[in-house]
Image (tube, rainbow, N blue to C red; front, side, top):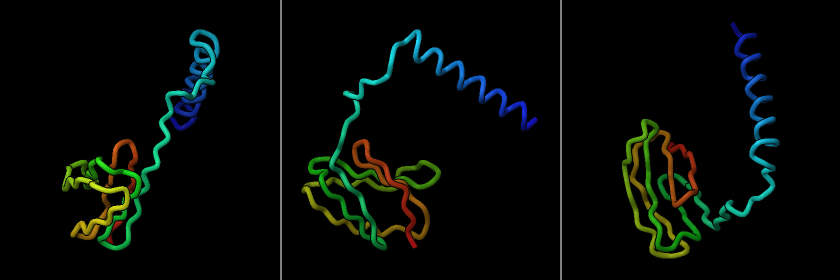
Length: 102
């Protein structure tokens, strides 16, 4: 069964490569990639967000339920989240970080 899945994965990769290079053209254009200067770091219950003025910090638990929303009003913001111990997902714009509160 394991060999079957490996063979299926290999065949899919070959098919995708053939379609990507031939039918749809080359994928060298990276002009749609957005480079953001947003940085998220955490120390205990405090979250430090830089480069996200005017955006919103969303906090999700591992089940995908939003447990908090915070407005970032400056380029350098420190927030005290007061969350229980556990794993959370922090999102600011397109930047997403998985963190663990201990």
